[in-house]
Length: 339
Image (tube, rainbow, N blue to C red):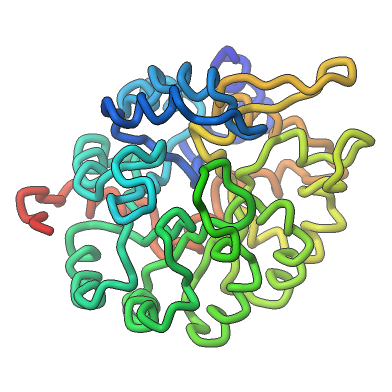
């Protein structure tokens, strides 16, 4: 989609593009094994093989920055280190070191999160060092091959809570083979909010197809936030949508508008839309996701509410303001990163 069209829509609504944050972005480190893995991957509704292969050429950090800076002012990078069941061949693989380098190179744009093995004995001692290096929070994915129920995770989760570092948790379905889907069940949140009551958590993808469970839990706990990273076709209620409209006012008002955060999960899931009753699949374009959100009817969100979800709620989740993160990014010294 033409960036000028999106910018004009933002202008019409009185929203400064520099204030928009995409809170769910992956910038994988492409290597030969990853390309081979993509070529041999079985097709999945969320990530068809040909779309996956075509996406690879779009994954350079500079390409993402150059294209997206016209209609967004920041993006949270969510890495996945080598401690996962697919290793460095995973289509989400991105090292913590690379994330730091990107935040240093583009201090006003990229917000760095870390990937850690919370079951490792030495991890609780590393978390303060990650914070001091500049990481704002941590991402957990079921691809890591362990559950957050695992008692070995307790000390790491305690550290995150004590250091005011938020946690992003992948919930719901995933296109990757070999993942234990029990690790992505939203009921894990009941355990987390009980044991770590001040830990801020962003639940991803509305936990589809288990979204009703997530909505039930999120409506009761202030520390749970939800990103919008799901196919835009599911945001609105329609006869084609089995989920009933994930962003329908009956859901968002019950849970609380202040808990919703705009995110797209670039480069996945791929963009899905309907044309004359036929489901179409295309490359992930964060601009298209943004335009779909901006054009949601007033009965869903007023302009002020759209601004809140696009530009404000994310800072409450992060527990930091933009100026703090920019200042921290500029001070990053990747030479000190030795683990």
